[in-house]
Amino acid sequence: QVQLVESGGGLVQAGGSLRLSCAASGRTFSRYAMGWFRQAPGKGREFVATISWNGGSTDYADSVRGRFTISRDNSENAVYLQMNSLKPEDTAVYYCAAGPLSSRWSDRYGYWGQGTQVAVSS
Image (cartoon, rainbow, N blue to C red; front, side):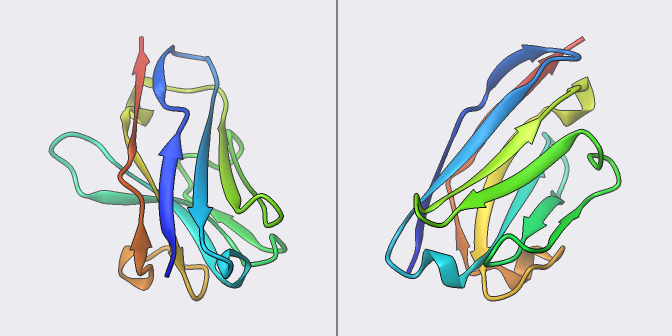
């Protein structure tokens, strides 16, 4: 079992940067692929990025590719999302998730954090 806690959200101006962190409990963190998803008000949950168990493979939504970077540190049981050149449309609650394989589909992840709010002002 894995428990996930996100942090690092906040309010930032358009063009700014934020770094989200997701701390995982449990000794089996390195066995899981990790993903970041987001949900804006009135919208469904949207894929943002995913990283394989060893960090060797990553994938991004087209809307964030080139601006966001996902990374992980298995020695620290943590996954990160560096967000640069933020836009108002990036405003959402951001969730990290753990699953057996990297995927863009939220139903492939069995463990979820509580989310952290990101707000980007224009």
